[in-house]
Image (cartoon, rainbow, N blue to C red):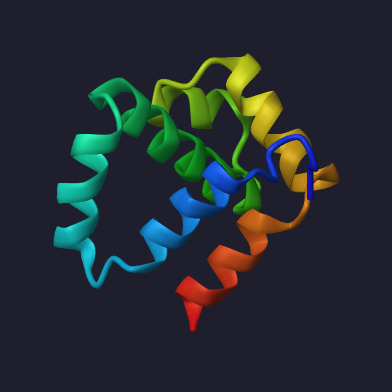
Length: 95
């Protein structure tokens, strides 16, 4: 975990997210918290990670998601050298 982001404010944000009960509450909260572009960027990264795990090519991913090769590369780096956060979430979604 990156100590640069471990702050009281970030803890409060995460604790707030953990209080959300369903997808509808997520829409309500995140539409207030984020811009539309921020939400779309986050969801795009998650979709890119899913496709990378499925061994899709950068070209296939870029065509389907509209993500730049820089974004795809960044997500790929996180999958290979990050904290395994994507894998943790995908594993739970598959259960």
